[in-house]
Length: 102
Image 1 (cartoon, helix red, strand yellow):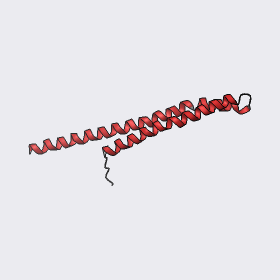
Image 2 (cartoon, helix red, strand yellow):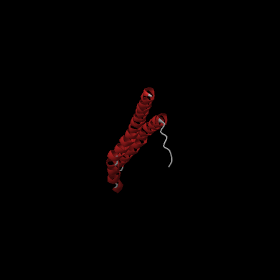
Image 3 (tube, one colour):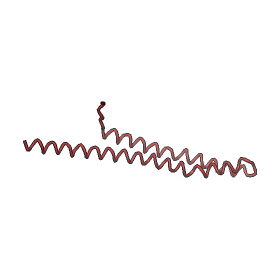
Image 4 (tube, one colour):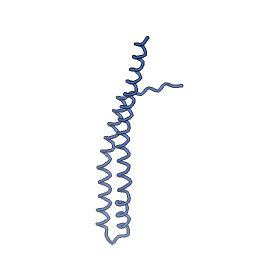
């Protein structure tokens, strides 16, 4: 069986990367949604106009939810790293107290 080695600093670094990705996602998503809506308005009277308008409005909520879930992953990675550090300190303290009793 392979050992599991959790390095809290690496989890924190991963969380920072994930939060950066969530932030970076916002600009291109908003640009695409705005472009679809704007183009829909410019093509009024064309058969594709309504479809482009629906594209802009229907993808807004799912893409916002995706961005929130990515950001939440960063938060969860930080929480996991903090919990692991706390657990390691608690176990080390328990062993230190056990050794002092002997």
